[in-house]
Image (cartoon, rainbow over all chains, first blue to last red; front, side, top):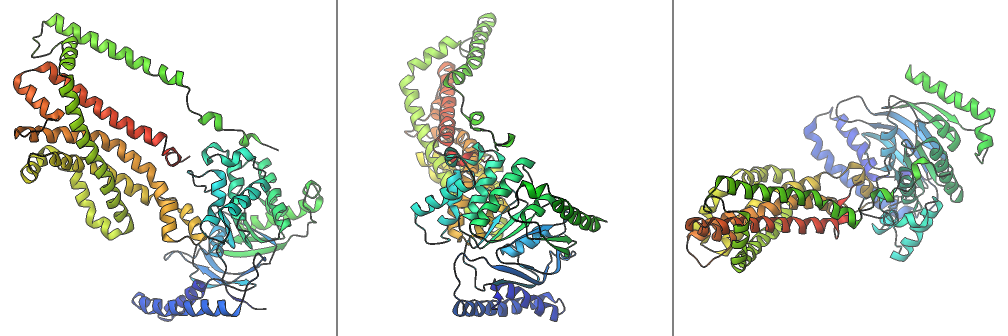
Length: 308
Length: 274
């Protein structure tokens, strides 16, 4: 099993932290460390490119080894997390506010560089642009673009070699899959409701056919009915072409319905991990079953433990 | 399946009908009529001499009499104001772009930007006349200086105030600096630029007229509204002076209306951020 660092910056981050901790935190060593680390970074990138050729659109598993993220001198937001997000499976992260769920997700997306530790990917390679998609808590649509143009954006940024027409067709397909009506595609975000905007946001994340989809409480602002609907739509897309999904949520029911694995976090650590044995497809029958209730209780008990 | 959150919101954001828009003018017209009547009454009751306060009819008459002079004056002043304003938009955007790129530049330039705002224009104008002469270009220069600050200020703010998650979105897809500038920063800044323009275009007319007060004194062959005003003031012709005042106000309104129309038509896509 080949496991190579996902982002070279990450090795670099780890090397840098190791070096600076060796220097016992003396800040003026930073430039030297910085130089050596950028060289390591380049070499690693080349090595990765030469060794591995990656199959496109294949689900990748993610793995964190002893991951630490620290902001300034305060207590680390992520405090030595080691965990695995299996390929093509859905993992939910639950935990009280401020436990580091979002920070972990941002680190997985490459939006936050770790202070220490590694994030690895398998099958191993430098991820292509658009291979890791992120759904923000807010829909984060550009207000001067129509729904369709918002979905086309990642493709226009040159994530892959699709032409303009292809991009339009793909964006429309994705929006249709999210059950957005044809006439709404040509409207601006301000003319859409909160639910429609989130559909557009999901379509934009999926349009690049990512192998990893990271979601940061995407449905937090929506009512329960809509939450269930969008969760089902998302699972349908996932069933079409399984990608690795990591879902940060406050909603235990959502975590139980959507995922294969639930990780409970507390103060920057993963305190418990549950395998979700509920049968697929996850329909109304599952939601009302005794097993669902039991699993729900297991998670909520664990969460209660974290709050105490 | 459609829930309460998902109903169509388009109707709520649709523009008002033409009839409703015309209706909005009625209170303004009534108020204007009341002011004109009050003005006429004041003149009649206190038997004011026309040199102090001419009646509305006299002002109108002077306006018609001097129509061609006023029109050419408005043309000259308007051209200067538009030139200075356009230059301030270009220069201001450029300076704002520079200032948004580096904190060092921001620290170095900002005191001077504030200087632009705080130094009284009537104090600089005579100095500029000495340096640049009794010329059209001096008027443009004064206009540029007075209308620059709002542009710099608001465009800098626009370029800096990009929501973090939008920046993250572009980072996530590995967007280049150029892509981020063209597809994110500039579109975000358009709204701020237009806000700056709305403040600036009114100032531009003021700047042009103030500059003309000084340029006109040189007896040069220059006849903007400001020059005409100082001339009529010296001659004690209050009626055309007031007519010129109205003309310059209309010039300012025309510029504001143009900017407003641009932002609500061609640029409307970039104006409404939720």
